[in-house]
Image (tube, rainbow, N blue to C red; front, side, top):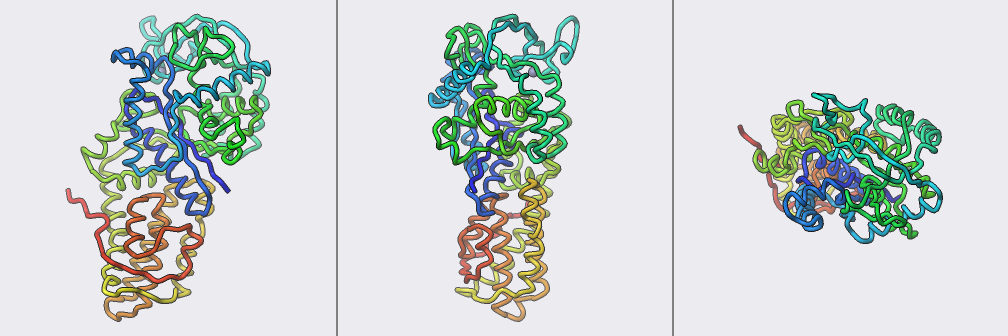
Amino acid sequence: MRVYITTPIYYPNDKPHIGSLYTVVLADFLTKLSKIMGYEAYMLTGLDEHGYKIYRSAKELGKSPLEFVDEMQKYFRESWERFQVDYFRFIRTSDKQHEDVVKYAIEMLYEKGYIYKGKYAGHYCVKCEAFYPTSKLIKEDNKYLCPIHNKEVEFLDEETYYLKISEFKDWIKSFIISNKSFITPKGYRNEAISYINELGDLSIARPRERVPWAVEVPFDKDFTVYVWIDALLNYLSAIGWPDDTYKDFWPATHIIGKDILKFHTVVWPILLKMLDMEPPRRVIVHGFWTVKGLKIGKSVKDVIDITKLYVDSLDNVDAYRYYLMRNAPIEKDSELSLDGVYRVYNDELADIIGNGFRRVTTLAMKKSVVRGRVDPEVLEKIRNIIKDLNGVYSKFLPSQYVILTLKVFKQLNEYLQEKQPWKNRDENILYNALFIAKIGLTMLYPILPETSKKAMNIIGTPLKPLKYVFLEESFYVRESPILFPKIRD
Ligand SMILES: [Zn+2]
C-alpha cells in the first residue's frame, strides 16, 4: 500500500513558526511510521506563494513578489531540514507546472457549468485572505475588526466568479456522516457539519487589478484565481494530476491545523467531486500551541521564530521533536513550555532511552560480536508491549506511540537490572538486551530519526520495517556513546 501524506502549504510572508512546525513534524512522523509499518509513504509540503498578502508584503519591501518568495522559501526548507523532515516534493504554487494545473481545473469547472459570474460585496481580512459576514466581526468605534487578527477589515465591492458549491451541501453532509474515519479526531466532525448548514457559493476569482500576483482565470483575463482554490489544488498538481501518475498516490491523508477545517473537509471534497475525483482518505486535525495563552495559528503575526525557539534555549532538535509528538491530545490547544521540553529530555530521553542504550553497549563493546537466541519470555514481553501498535497507527495517536516506545526501553532497563549481565557474563543475556534495544531503536525512528539511525549503526544492524526486526541476527557493537547528555540547570 502507498500512503500519501500532506501538510498545508504555508504563506511565506513570515518565517516558519511553531504552528507550521507542529503540522510538519506530525506529517513526518506519520510518514516515517508508515515506512516502518511496511508501507510506501510519501510526504508533501510546500508554500502558498500567491495572493494579495504576499503581493503587499513584497511591495512594502520594494521587491517583486517572486523575488520575495524566492528569498523566503529557504527559511522553510532550512527549518524542515534541521528538524529531519523528509518530503518527496516541496511544492511552490508559483511553479509553472502547478499554475497550469490550476488553469486546467478552473477551465474544467467552467465547462461543466459550475462557475458563474456575480458581484461580491463584503468585509475582507487580508491576513486571513477571507471574507467575513458582519455577524462574525468585532465592532469597535464604528469599525469592523477581524475576529482572529483584531485588525480592521476592508470593505470590498467587486465583480467575481462563483463556484456552485452549495449544490453539494447534501452530498458532503452525508459523506461526512457516513465516513466516520474521514475526519480525525472525531470531535471535529460536528464542527465541519456546522459549516455546511450556512454554506453559500464560493467566490473564486479576484479582479486582476487588485490581485495581480495570482494565477490568471483562463476564460477571463481580467480576473485571477482566489488563493485558497489555487492552494488546495497543490495536493493534485504535486502528484501529476491530471496525468494518470496521480492514481499511484490518491487519495491523500491531509494533516491540518483546526483553523482551516472548513476548506479541507467541506470545500475541498466538493471541489474534488466536481473534478470527478475521489475525496481525500482522511483529514487529521490538530489544535494550536499557545504561549502564555496567545494562539499561534496559520496566519497570526505573533509567532515564535523556530530558530529562536531552539537555538536560544536548547539547541537540540530531538528534544523538540520528542516534546511535540509526546503532546496529547492533539486536538486540544496546548501551552508550549520550555520547562516541559527540558523535563522530557532529562527524564525520558536521557534517563530511560539514553541510559538503557549506554548500559547495554558498554557491556557489548567488550566483545567483537554478540550472538545468541531470543528468549521466548523476552519475545512475549515485547510483543505484549507493541500489540496495540496497529490501533495507535490507524487512530493516529502520536503520544501513545511515544509511550509504547518508552515502554520498550523501560523493559530493556528492567531486563538488565534483573539479569545483571555485568556479573554473570552470559553472552545470551547480552544478546537479548541488544534485541530489545533494536526493537526500541527501530520504533524511535519516526520520533527521532537521526538518533535512531546513528544508534542502529552503532549496534551493527540497519534500520528496517518492524516485521523484519524480529529476525535473529548478530550484533557488532563498536562504541558506547551517551545519546542524550543530561542538561543541568
Ligand atoms: Zn483575519
